Image (cartoon, rainbow, N blue to C red; front, side, top):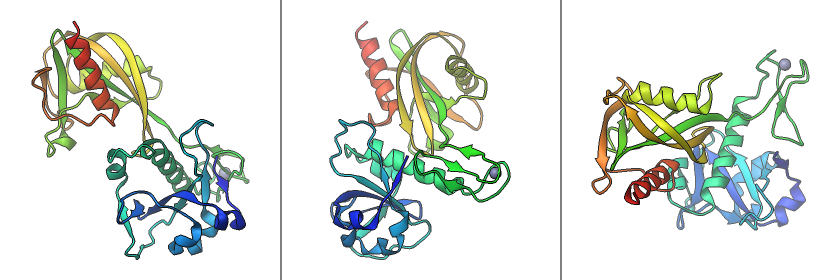
Length: 277
Ligand SMILES: [Zn+2]
């Protein structure tokens, strides 16, 4: 649920602002941080007074003391020297404490509102529900909620080695990572793990162990992490998906993702698992 804000409160309330402009986030040009300000200090929002929403804290003990306000400026061009636009990814990996949960959620809500303006069933204009995060059609009563797409992500180990793959899309960065893929309709998480691994690198695994999960807002995935043991088969890379896959010794790892991502955490956990054997 996001709460529409009344104007008097907005003018007196200092807040953290998550402002989307042409697919990017507005940050203070000097500090590269999200604006923490009163509305009056953000004159470029003057025509968005009716479109400011508060992001509810995930839990009461959340570290954010300031309210978080979300605004979607859509395709509007922002021209002000004090402010810059940075990509979502850029800000997420810049490791600001607050970034991941707050920006990720704000983006998913914004994306949801943008893509559900009309009813998917009858095509009428849909309206936002005040008390929960949903869009409702008053003609046919269809209601839609933000989409969450589960994705399995898995690291595979065999004796002293870990299997890492370079996706076709990460070819340029020469980065090797864990395998990942979307769960298909009607499939369990475990079935998705076995299918993805077999499809992408042609090997079989056993002894799946749940590791951890992480919302990944590109645009609405939920990464569910597993650690698996190799059970058989030769590496055979899936065309158009995997550029290369190899078994790596843990003291000779290639370029891997940072620990802010669950992939980085999975690799670290697997490496320590192997190291402690
Ligand atoms: Zn409808």
